[in-house]
Image 1 (cartoon, helix red, strand yellow):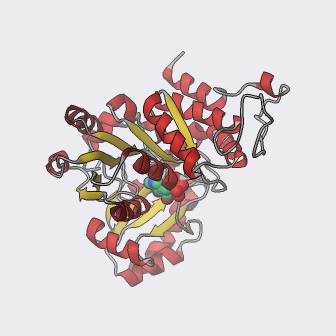
Image 2 (image 1 turned 135 degrees about the vertical axis):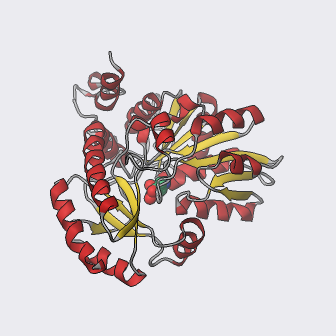
Image 3 (image 1 turned 120 degrees about the horizontal axis):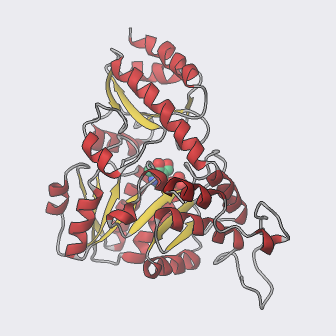
Length: 376
Ligand SMILES: Cc1ncc(COP(=O)(O)O)c(C=O)c1O
């Protein structure tokens, strides 16, 4: 079986078992808090057949021993931090990490955990920030705001040599376009709210890694109540079945839009790894096999013009999150004070994050063309 077919099999069939469910071809939703004594499952805070199916799929896609399903992407990161870190430990993370993760790291300082943020593409700067008490290196590649890459294999190798754990937020790439565990990363983290669910109607998260580490992370998920509902697990199982089709379409459309935007006089920066002009092109080709619908831009205009541009879009919806069927636009740092500050120190301001959904690419192009007139 080819690798591609193998992944399609994982997405559409692995972990499902109609024979166990009266022949049902779609896994039924086990919407129950507990199970009667003497059965395989006991209590849905810990375990449920709907969790099992998708955990098997994610572990197989990531080529890891085990995966665990959580209530959302942020709780997946929280589960990792609360399991592997203790007071006195230090974390090195990339500057352009998802703001929710950065807030978690900020908050961890209350519990005696410190962190240092480093530039995304600079492995030397990253290891220069390592201290004797550094326990974890936290990556996000591509990063979700400015799509910067880190050299995952190089960082994982050096971290392993020094006995430091590594974790990566692999949301942008998904396991279809990037396999962090193959490159030596210990823990891979996802927000299933994004591409896996794919329809903007369910929150979820995953962590995958070795059986030993995931075993501990799973115990904490159960203990702290970080798990999810059977209904959300079912929606995510359904979303996974079309993941490869959707990603292909998101990627084709995003490339078309990014190529248009990089030639437009009102645009001074387009961040999209699949562009031929992408500054980290070699690294992209080394560690990724494709890119989805997420990209970001900076314009030549004022904040007021940016605001008009964003509000002038008709097909793109102004909203946070991404990875669903709908095209989105999010002027990062335009409203929330915490994001304003991150926007200034991590991205020099003015990042407009865009997501190419499943609409017709020409309709999206026309929408951009019209809205960009505010810069004339
Ligand atoms: C890159 C990235 N990581 C993690 C998260 C957090 O996921 P969730 O919203 O499911 O908690 C998000 C959500 O926006 C994200 O964009």
